Length: 199
Image 1: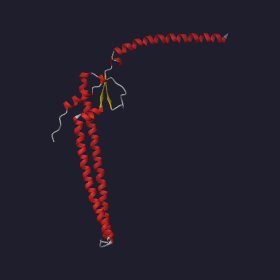
Image 2 (image 1 turned 90 degrees about the vertical axis):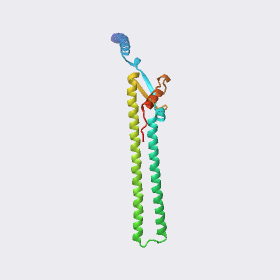
Image 3 (image 1 turned 180 degrees about the horizontal axis):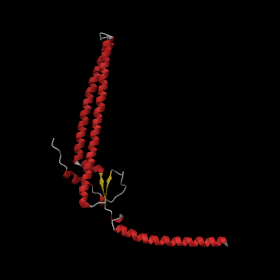
Image 4 (image 1 turned 135 degrees about the vertical axis):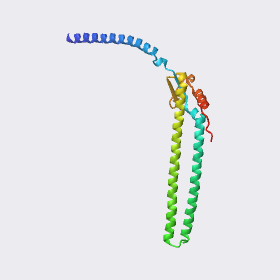
């Protein structure tokens, strides 16, 4: 008898919970509609920009890359020239040493130390120049990012997007309607705003 009473109490509690949940769901549905009407998810205006396209066609980016490639090539040529000079001196030292052309062992050691110092200096120079190139690359990336962000802030004053997503290949965006793609519009605006510096 006690088991039956507990069963009825449990069923009564369950139906109270179900009724409460149904009322809450109905009220929640009304709240959701109101919230969406006041700028919720249904009113979000979203667009995306293909970053790969910007990087390959934005004139500012192209100019930054060309300048960095030119500087990188100059560094490579400079280091290659110094490396060839060093290699030549090392070979000359080796030939002299094998032919006993040094007046003394002390003189041979001095020449060895001098060439060794040149090698260390070349390594130091290489590290310094590579570090400068990396710093310039980082600075370029920061400038490019700032340029795009600042443009989008201005651009969005009239467009009113809630969210603008960047997309690289298939990394971030698995699917989107092409109508949401504002890449060309952004690219045209960026290029129109950019004026190439006079060297």
